[in-house]
Amino acid sequence: MIVILMGVSGSGKTTVGELLAAQMGCGFSDADAFHSAANKAKMHAGTPLTDDDRWPWLAAIRAAIEAHQARGEDHVFTCSALKAVYRDILGKGDADVHFVYLKGSAALLAQRLAGRSGHFFDPHLLDSQLATLEEPADAITVDIAPPPADIVTSIQAALPHAE
Image (cartoon, rainbow, N blue to C red; front, side):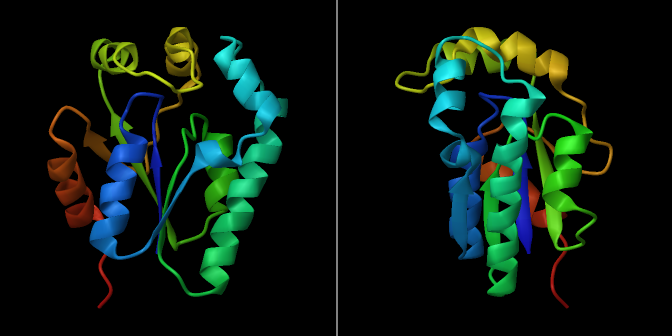
């Protein structure tokens, strides 16, 4: 099973993803690691990424998903996956890929980003991400307000279980 935690910056993807992977006993990959140096520099400078910036990034994540599947490994990924077309690239109608949308209010997200330090994402880009976000109709949707451990419990309860 491949789980992709999606949502805007500040939604807790990395924190929740690491906890979920530990609970599932599998690997974890943060989509930020797949960004080019040029993409990271743009975001650090407060410049929103374009689709042309994102295509190679999404292709790299999809290749990593396929590599884990080829090895028969469960894996947790994080990826903002803001648009449906991005999710199509990542999931490709693949029944083994499950999206979990970490959803929170703009106020809570802004508060979290304001408290961050040492991250390349400029907090002023939150409005751009929220404007770009196409909320998924077919993902597991989880509120980000509870503590991370409670969020992980909710996700695990909603994921399909092997029979």
